[in-house]
Image (cartoon, rainbow, N blue to C red; front, side):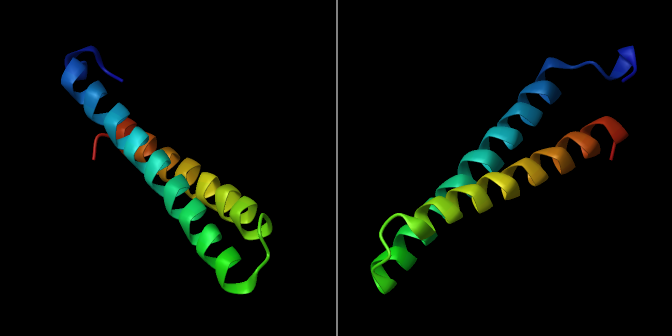
Length: 73
């Protein structure tokens, strides 16, 4: 990253985007897993699967956000 592009507001925006994508995808995965568990009566299985899928989706989204931030798009 070049020195003229260093702006604390851009860094705050990146961190906010990372936080929102991680938290949002994890919460969606947890709630979808809980819903599936209630539908099929398999109490912790889909909750754990949803948590891991949400975590993977959040990390993937975080990597895309960081890549876009450093590419300058």
